[in-house]
Length: 118
Length: 117
Image (tube, rainbow over all chains, first blue to last red; front, top):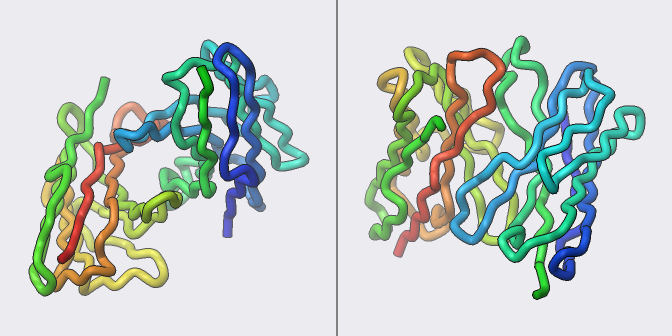
Protein backbone atom coordinates (compact mmCIF):
# COMPACT_ATOMS: atom_id res chain seq x y z
CA UNK A 1 0.00 0.00 0.00
CA UNK A 2 1.10 3.51 -0.68
CA UNK A 3 2.05 5.69 2.27
CA UNK A 4 2.86 9.37 2.53
CA UNK A 5 4.88 10.77 5.42
CA UNK A 6 5.31 14.35 6.52
CA UNK A 7 7.85 14.47 9.31
CA UNK A 8 7.32 18.10 10.34
CA UNK A 9 4.14 18.68 12.35
CA UNK A 10 4.72 22.43 12.39
CA UNK A 11 7.00 24.95 10.72
CA UNK A 12 7.39 28.62 11.47
CA UNK A 13 8.64 31.21 9.00
CA UNK A 14 9.18 34.95 9.06
CA UNK A 15 7.17 36.94 6.57
CA UNK A 16 9.07 37.34 3.27
CA UNK A 17 11.37 34.45 4.14
CA UNK A 18 11.47 30.95 2.67
CA UNK A 19 10.27 27.71 4.22
CA UNK A 20 10.61 24.14 2.97
CA UNK A 21 8.20 21.36 3.85
CA UNK A 22 9.29 17.74 3.63
CA UNK A 23 7.38 14.79 2.25
CA UNK A 24 8.40 11.22 1.56
CA UNK A 25 6.30 8.48 0.06
CA UNK A 26 6.43 4.80 -0.58
CA UNK A 27 5.14 3.16 -3.73
CA UNK A 28 5.95 0.36 -6.12
CA UNK A 29 4.29 2.18 -9.02
CA UNK A 30 6.23 3.96 -11.73
CA UNK A 31 3.40 6.17 -12.99
CA UNK A 32 1.94 8.39 -10.32
CA UNK A 33 1.26 11.97 -9.32
CA UNK A 34 2.20 14.00 -6.27
CA UNK A 35 0.48 17.06 -4.88
CA UNK A 36 0.64 19.68 -2.22
CA UNK A 37 -2.68 20.88 -0.86
CA UNK A 38 -3.27 23.85 1.38
CA UNK A 39 -6.01 23.82 4.01
CA UNK A 40 -6.56 27.26 5.55
CA UNK A 41 -8.69 27.81 8.66
CA UNK A 42 -11.80 27.69 6.45
CA UNK A 43 -10.85 24.03 5.85
CA UNK A 44 -11.40 24.31 2.12
CA UNK A 45 -8.81 22.15 0.36
CA UNK A 46 -6.84 24.11 -2.21
CA UNK A 47 -4.49 22.53 -4.73
CA UNK A 48 -1.12 24.29 -4.55
CA UNK A 49 1.01 22.33 -6.97
CA UNK A 50 1.10 19.07 -8.88
CA UNK A 51 4.00 16.93 -10.12
CA UNK A 52 3.83 14.09 -12.60
CA UNK A 53 6.32 11.33 -11.76
CA UNK A 54 7.37 10.93 -15.38
CA UNK A 55 8.50 14.54 -15.55
CA UNK A 56 12.04 15.25 -14.45
CA UNK A 57 11.50 18.99 -14.26
CA UNK A 58 10.33 20.26 -10.91
CA UNK A 59 6.94 21.96 -10.91
CA UNK A 60 6.63 25.62 -9.99
CA UNK A 61 3.64 27.84 -9.35
CA UNK A 62 4.58 31.42 -8.62
CA UNK A 63 6.12 31.42 -5.11
CA UNK A 64 5.67 27.67 -4.71
CA UNK A 65 8.12 25.14 -6.07
CA UNK A 66 8.90 21.51 -5.43
CA UNK A 67 12.04 19.42 -5.25
CA UNK A 68 11.07 16.03 -6.64
CA UNK A 69 13.60 13.27 -6.08
CA UNK A 70 12.05 10.15 -7.60
CA UNK A 71 14.77 7.70 -6.63
CA UNK A 72 14.68 8.90 -3.04
CA UNK A 73 10.88 9.11 -3.09
CA UNK A 74 11.04 12.60 -1.75
CA UNK A 75 8.80 15.55 -2.65
CA UNK A 76 9.45 18.78 -0.76
CA UNK A 77 7.61 22.07 -1.11
CA UNK A 78 9.37 25.42 -0.98
CA UNK A 79 7.38 28.53 -0.23
CA UNK A 80 9.33 31.64 -1.14
CA UNK A 81 8.62 35.19 0.01
CA UNK A 82 6.17 33.86 2.59
CA UNK A 83 3.02 35.87 3.12
CA UNK A 84 0.59 35.96 6.02
CA UNK A 85 -1.99 34.30 3.81
CA UNK A 86 0.26 31.26 3.45
CA UNK A 87 -0.47 30.29 7.05
CA UNK A 88 -2.35 26.99 6.85
CA UNK A 89 -2.08 23.23 7.04
CA UNK A 90 -0.22 21.76 4.10
CA UNK A 91 -0.81 18.20 3.00
CA UNK A 92 1.32 16.17 0.67
CA UNK A 93 -0.72 13.72 -1.39
CA UNK A 94 -0.20 10.87 -3.82
CA UNK A 95 -2.26 9.11 -6.42
CA UNK A 96 -1.55 6.51 -9.06
CA UNK A 97 -2.21 6.92 -12.77
CA UNK A 98 -5.81 7.64 -13.75
CA UNK A 99 -5.64 4.71 -16.12
CA UNK A 100 -5.53 2.32 -13.21
CA UNK A 101 -8.47 1.33 -11.06
CA UNK A 102 -9.33 3.98 -8.47
CA UNK A 103 -6.69 6.15 -10.07
CA UNK A 104 -8.16 9.34 -8.71
CA UNK A 105 -8.02 8.22 -5.07
CA UNK A 106 -5.69 10.40 -3.02
CA UNK A 107 -3.49 9.27 -0.14
CA UNK A 108 -2.59 12.12 2.19
CA UNK A 109 0.32 12.70 4.51
CA UNK A 110 -0.27 13.74 8.10
CA UNK A 111 0.10 17.43 7.37
CA UNK A 112 2.40 20.28 8.36
CA UNK A 113 1.10 23.42 9.97
CA UNK A 114 2.81 26.54 8.66
CA UNK A 115 2.90 29.61 10.86
CA UNK A 116 3.91 32.92 9.33
CA UNK A 117 5.30 35.56 11.67
CA UNK A 118 4.82 39.21 10.69
CA UNK B 1 -13.51 27.23 -12.19
CA UNK B 2 -15.30 24.04 -11.33
CA UNK B 3 -17.14 24.03 -8.04
CA UNK B 4 -18.19 21.29 -5.71
CA UNK B 5 -20.93 22.25 -3.30
CA UNK B 6 -21.26 20.35 -0.06
CA UNK B 7 -24.27 20.81 2.17
CA UNK B 8 -24.78 21.39 5.02
CA UNK B 9 -21.62 23.17 6.18
CA UNK B 10 -22.33 22.16 9.73
CA UNK B 11 -24.94 20.12 11.51
CA UNK B 12 -25.73 19.19 15.08
CA UNK B 13 -27.85 16.12 15.65
CA UNK B 14 -29.00 14.01 18.54
CA UNK B 15 -27.48 10.64 19.21
CA UNK B 16 -29.40 7.90 17.43
CA UNK B 17 -30.65 10.04 14.57
CA UNK B 18 -29.46 10.01 10.96
CA UNK B 19 -27.83 12.82 9.04
CA UNK B 20 -27.52 13.23 5.29
CA UNK B 21 -24.69 15.17 3.68
CA UNK B 22 -24.86 16.14 0.00
CA UNK B 23 -22.00 16.60 -2.42
CA UNK B 24 -22.91 18.21 -5.70
CA UNK B 25 -20.77 19.08 -8.70
CA UNK B 26 -22.20 22.32 -10.03
CA UNK B 27 -20.82 22.59 -13.56
CA UNK B 28 -19.39 19.21 -14.45
CA UNK B 29 -20.25 15.53 -14.34
CA UNK B 30 -18.51 13.17 -11.98
CA UNK B 31 -19.04 9.44 -12.26
CA UNK B 32 -16.85 8.97 -9.21
CA UNK B 33 -16.79 10.96 -6.00
CA UNK B 34 -14.83 10.43 -2.82
CA UNK B 35 -15.75 10.85 0.83
CA UNK B 36 -13.08 11.69 3.40
CA UNK B 37 -13.16 12.08 7.14
CA UNK B 38 -10.90 14.43 9.03
CA UNK B 39 -10.47 14.43 12.80
CA UNK B 40 -9.23 17.60 14.52
CA UNK B 41 -5.61 18.39 13.69
CA UNK B 42 -5.32 15.24 11.62
CA UNK B 43 -5.17 14.35 7.97
CA UNK B 44 -7.89 13.32 5.57
CA UNK B 45 -8.74 9.65 5.60
CA UNK B 46 -10.59 8.18 2.65
CA UNK B 47 -13.80 6.53 3.76
CA UNK B 48 -15.32 5.40 0.48
CA UNK B 49 -15.49 5.83 -3.26
CA UNK B 50 -18.93 6.70 -4.56
CA UNK B 51 -19.77 5.32 -8.01
CA UNK B 52 -22.71 6.52 -10.08
CA UNK B 53 -24.92 3.60 -10.99
CA UNK B 54 -23.21 1.05 -8.78
CA UNK B 55 -22.37 0.33 -5.17
CA UNK B 56 -19.87 2.40 -3.26
CA UNK B 57 -16.47 0.97 -2.45
CA UNK B 58 -15.58 1.29 1.22
CA UNK B 59 -12.13 1.43 2.72
CA UNK B 60 -11.10 -1.15 5.25
CA UNK B 61 -12.57 -0.51 8.66
CA UNK B 62 -15.41 1.73 7.46
CA UNK B 63 -18.86 0.40 8.35
CA UNK B 64 -21.02 0.20 5.26
CA UNK B 65 -24.25 0.12 7.22
CA UNK B 66 -23.37 3.17 9.25
CA UNK B 67 -22.13 5.33 6.38
CA UNK B 68 -24.59 4.88 3.54
CA UNK B 69 -23.54 6.31 0.20
CA UNK B 70 -25.84 6.94 -2.73
CA UNK B 71 -24.60 8.32 -6.04
CA UNK B 72 -27.98 9.22 -7.49
CA UNK B 73 -26.79 11.07 -10.58
CA UNK B 74 -23.66 12.23 -12.35
CA UNK B 75 -23.66 15.38 -10.24
CA UNK B 76 -24.82 14.23 -6.80
CA UNK B 77 -23.52 11.91 -4.12
CA UNK B 78 -24.92 11.68 -0.61
CA UNK B 79 -23.44 10.34 2.60
CA UNK B 80 -25.89 9.35 5.31
CA UNK B 81 -24.58 8.78 8.80
CA UNK B 82 -27.10 6.40 10.32
CA UNK B 83 -27.82 6.09 14.03
CA UNK B 84 -25.20 8.70 14.75
CA UNK B 85 -23.19 8.59 17.95
CA UNK B 86 -20.81 11.12 19.51
CA UNK B 87 -17.81 9.23 18.12
CA UNK B 88 -19.12 9.98 14.61
CA UNK B 89 -18.55 13.67 15.26
CA UNK B 90 -15.99 14.79 12.73
CA UNK B 91 -15.34 16.86 9.62
CA UNK B 92 -16.49 15.16 6.42
CA UNK B 93 -15.19 16.28 3.02
CA UNK B 94 -16.17 15.13 -0.44
CA UNK B 95 -14.19 15.46 -3.63
CA UNK B 96 -15.19 15.03 -7.24
CA UNK B 97 -12.90 14.63 -10.26
CA UNK B 98 -14.55 15.81 -13.48
CA UNK B 99 -15.23 13.10 -16.06
CA UNK B 100 -13.96 15.46 -18.74
CA UNK B 101 -11.35 16.43 -19.53
CA UNK B 102 -9.44 13.36 -18.50
CA UNK B 103 -6.63 13.68 -15.98
CA UNK B 104 -8.26 16.60 -14.24
CA UNK B 105 -7.71 16.81 -10.53
CA UNK B 106 -10.58 16.41 -8.15
CA UNK B 107 -12.27 19.46 -6.67
CA UNK B 108 -13.15 19.47 -3.01
CA UNK B 109 -16.33 20.50 -1.28
CA UNK B 110 -16.12 22.94 1.60
CA UNK B 111 -16.72 20.18 4.14
CA UNK B 112 -19.35 19.40 6.75
CA UNK B 113 -18.74 19.63 10.46
CA UNK B 114 -20.91 17.03 12.18
CA UNK B 115 -21.49 17.21 15.91
CA UNK B 116 -23.49 14.46 17.58
CA UNK B 117 -24.80 15.29 21.03
